Image (cartoon, rainbow, N blue to C red; front, side, top):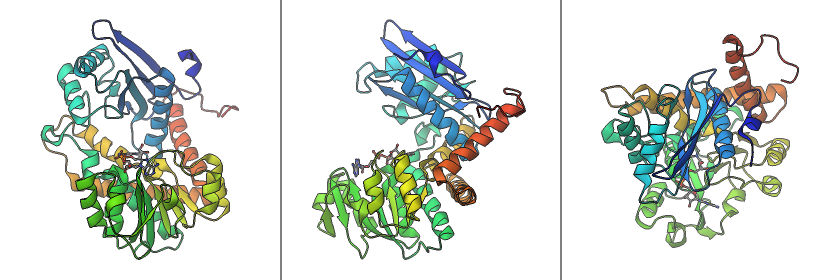
Length: 387
Ligand SMILES: NC(=O)c1ccc[n+]([C@@H]2O[C@H](COP(=O)([O-])OP(=O)(O)OC[C@H]3O[C@@H](n4cnc5c(N)ncnc54)[C@H](O)[C@@H]3O)[C@@H](O)[C@H]2O)c1
């Protein structure tokens, strides 16, 4: 078992709070990683396997995500050790929220992650008697329903368009392959379709569909709504491919939008796209990122391309105490502007330094967090040799 003190490095965590409640059996943890740029914000997850180390890692990812997209919140994450299907879920959730009433919402605002639903966010608000305690509540409570709106997938397509522009590829008329047809993949397909691109391949955990002339996205969305993820086997249009084959089909842009670790060295050598845009978190291994760069394939990192959800979360934070519903067109406009600019900045920086976009993007995020820490007097002005 890792000693929580061993998790502390130059960036954080600043605070780790472990809580428990005997009667409900609730056990959980809040990790506030780095608040130099703003208060802690990151999802709250519920799973029987939550560990302090896992939540600390995810809190660190949030530190880089917020800084990467240049929004003023700090990295944090919370986790509850429980089965999300337990009949005691609400009691456990209420006990968790109560136990963290010193920190929430002054230092950390809860949000959605694995195992928590929009209604759970509403329960947290209710328990603490504060609308500011959680974001991710249903629309009828004034929340921003990220997945329903498809904010992340929309941002992935906007980022892809900006990246395509940099490599001299016109997205309109280009061929796109998408792995995963869930909240991210389906919304990205819709936006690509609107942009005039041809979606030539899509996949789910059940398999893949390929049509070099372009699939009918509206029809795919209807089929998914009616049949679920198995629609790829029953669709009757396009050629059925085995799962994973969509990554190496002939196309211009590849969007992995399903799960992590799908592009290893071997796959990176076989990808035919000129541009890879990471919709999923961590789909490409670091060595595969190097191989793509050596082959002249541009890869837009996850924390740049899938930051649409983070931008929407920043709006949700702003409207927590507002009497007005969040204005969704404003959210989409902001996602487009911010993700396009950030994609261009990161790709330019990668070219300038001769490094991968992942390395360049992480470097920019670190610089921003370090500058905030210096300004607040949290670290000395002179750079430390270890940094
Ligand atoms: N939802 C968001 O706002 C958001 C934000 C940032 C990052 N992400 C990341 O994007 C990814 C997808 O998230 P989501 O919310 O769309 O999930 P989801 O559960 O809505 O959809 C996942 C899709 O991927 C498919 N899939 C699963 N395994 C597959 C495989 N091996 N091959 C092909 N398809 C497979 C599923 O069938 C489904 O169609 C995850 O990595 C997630 O962490 C999501």
